[in-house]
Length: 302
Ligand code: RUB
Image (tube, rainbow, N blue to C red):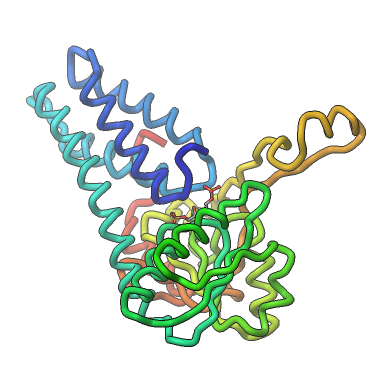
């Protein structure tokens, strides 16, 4: 959790592979590939829900294995991995800024926008809208149990956005005043369902009730190609100590604590998915996914 948010996680994985390639003592390209594959596997296990993580690793290692021939020398392989990592990182940061540009068009002066958790893509949209001198207000949920909403609120306030934090449980009370909800994503399934911070689906249901627009902002490497084959996205379960203290647990030994970190919002509750490739209704995501990932399981690194 020192590195959090699906986009940052993906870029950190790319940095880590670059680091492996740079510092490896492998003597042959084959040894280096084995080492990189092990690093990639370990990185993938770090956060099971953010599909940006395996997508980033597969982009780099898949690219390296495609570019590898019998005559490739160690130095060349190292350089290739470094170049692919840098390429992923710059595509990722570029995608966030394009999403900012596209998404800001959807915000108009006078809007009340609600967001949940802390998403770089959503924050970029709001900051871009602000820099275009649009005057709007933002409600940010606290996002229990780790309060990532405070991060979002602090960034927005520092940039002059009129922002208020509300308890997660106050969403329904305010929803009739909200013009649009914008959230990020950790993974998007082939049917357009969005996996994001726990509580997102509850907000989507409430938005549906009041016919409030519900947008998702996500780079295309959040699309989960494995879901084309019927795989489900794993939901990370975090420590009960994020919810209650160790002391409280000891005093109440009969109480079990559950702490799922993400939930799934079905496509029926989503109006639009904003990506760096344009905006899509959730039902259209499958076509983008097939175009971007023509071979959903192309690698031996899975
Ligand atoms: C963060 C979270 C964010 C998505 C998208 O959860 O759910 O909404 O990761 O973020 P956590 P981004 O804090 O548990 O990692 O747009 O920055 O990729």
